[in-house]
Image (cartoon, rainbow, N blue to C red):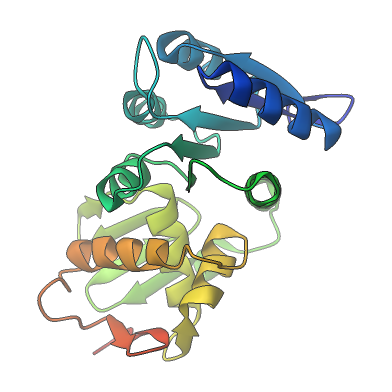
Length: 242
């Protein structure tokens, strides 16, 4: 982790002074190093420095909105976890943020303890991913899953169909990996959220449904699901070879 004395560094891109103070105080009490920027354009430049472990990003910002900041960072290859904040409660804003590469979101006003729990979960998952990347204990052959016409290479974090590479955002990849590692099992939304996002669900299981819908489109399952089957009232089941 990029830190001072082992403390994770958090970049807060937010223009509300009151929220900056409240978030900064709460995060520092938890032991995090916090740097706040009140402008989207300046925040994007700061995020590109590589000095941070996680970013808390507001949508409504001067200079450049949070959607564009998130999109530009992901396009540049920046994989830092992003927790997006929005004052809007519409589903479309949530969907847009997740599609552009945000790892999680909270709608204002939010409970500070919920935010702290989400931050901790994102950092824990990011650290685990870095450790897994460094590990040489898993042979390459064991990191490749073939189902139907598709091939998921977990070493390359890449889904392909023949010679065609099918682009996945970070959460689509993580969710698909949970499915392919647990074929023919009925998986609850809460379990999928915990495994792919790193925390237990409260009111955010809708996030799972959104990402399943995106995966279905990319797997050709949109109109007639073959691989990702809905188990009504519970969750989903992955069928490798329907």
